[in-house]
Length: 372
Image (tube, rainbow, N blue to C red; front, side, top):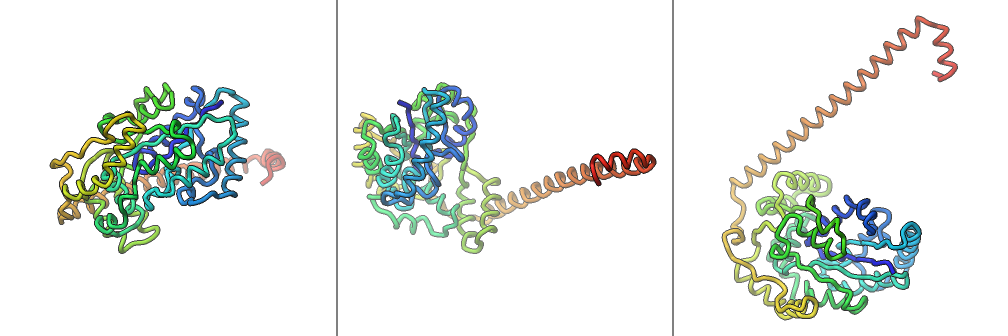
């Protein structure tokens, strides 16, 4: 049987970085025996809608299954020992609904993949809920929301982001023994390349397990930039909002595991108490350990944010102006280069035409061959 390794996200656990590097290395991986299901050859049809599923979607299942069977036949025909990798954050469900629909998503994936001669494993990276929630809040601002952290927090309760429930949903469908749980935390992924290397060890890829050129995606905003963006979202829409976000993405991005806090120390403790029991169950049943995540460390790097200062606004705005100026200069240089190329081509054509006029017989013959 071929192996099918389904990486289900969750959101804010380096999924985009995994996918980017899988895509970059896809040819080498195929030589190693792993085919990455991407672009037009994804496992499902329109994976962007999967996270909304709350029931079996028969038309989607039939269309995806037909497409997937064709991919399997094609790749197995060339290499009977080929294995398959599929990765999508959408497979974990909708984070803005607390991932409560994960089981429904799993049921759809099961119907697409069943009876196709596949040994299926489900890989999931989990992030401690307070870190995850702060990151999800930032994502909501990047998507155009204007709510405060407190208002966002009040939309959810302990049944949301319950990792045990999410895993149980998949275990009920695919079998508990098929679920592979990993931790997205600096203690377990200490280096730049740790995530890709860990993923490689999980799937059995030497290429990934020894990879040392990881490219990170979706770095996120610094804390000041996040607050500026939240305020800007109130006053801009559509393309303007998108352009501003792209600018601030470049001038003030944060890096993986860079720490800053939206919770106060007390709020964080209260929030994490919601998940003590369920996280312990995950650790015991899926990792044979007592603790799922290390406790948070309270220090100067994650003190509560005290709000924007005039200095921070000026610095961010100045960086944005410089970036726009630099981009403008780069565009001018590209345009000048292109115009020069066109001008030289025009001059060459003009010179050729003028010289050709001196030889009417040759001109007539060429015209007969090539037309006008």
